[in-house]
Length: 80
Image (cartoon, rainbow, N blue to C red; front, side, top):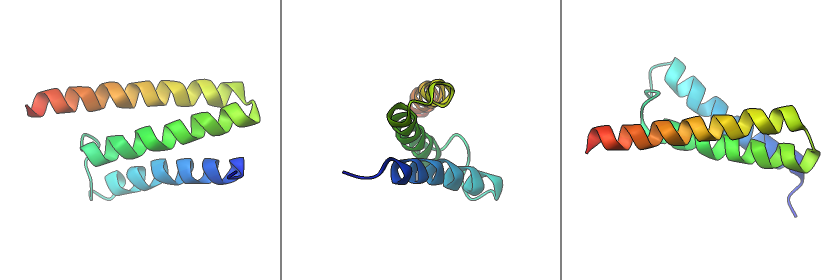
């Protein structure tokens, strides 16, 4: 089984990569890839928080995931 710390590192890295790509105008915060990276990262961080029993971090990341999924749905509807 993968160590929880590696799950957390991959999740945090995913969110940070999307943030830096947006920050340096390589990707827009409304792009599908940006939102997918955020969803993937926040789900991994949610799982990490669950494994480590860190409730505030768990709550933060489930909300982050929900908000990112809602934004992705809105972006997809706007492009149709």
